Length: 129
Picture 1 (cartoon, rainbow, N blue to C red):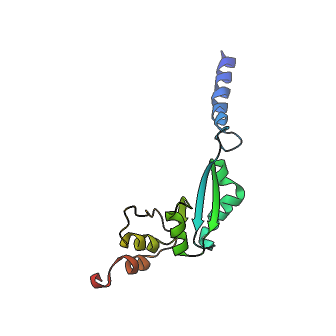
Picture 2: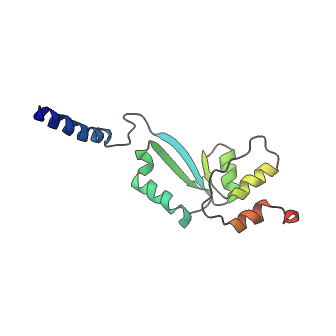
C-alpha cells in the first residue's frame, strides 16, 4: 500500500511537468505571420527588440515581421493600406484619421510614454481648458 501511495504521489508531482515542453507550444502548426510597422527605432521599444532577438514571439506561435516606416504619416498609411497588421505610432495619427471622417477608424489600444499633460494638450480643445 505504501508503495502505491508513493507511486501516486510521484505521478502527481511529475504531472505538471508534462505540460512543459520544447518549441513554441504549437506542435506542428505553422507560425502566424504578424506584420508590425514602427514609426522609428526607439529605446521605448527595447522590450520588443529583445523579444524578437530572443525568439519569444516565435515561442508563442508568432512570426513578427518588423518594418520601420520613419514617420507617423508613413506608418499610418502602411497600416491603412494593408501593409501592416499593427502599427507602433502616436495616438495623434489615429485622431487625425478620425477627424478626416473615415468610415473605419484606427483603434489605439496602448500608449507607452504619454504623460497626462500630453493627453490633455492633445485631446482637449483649447476652448475647453
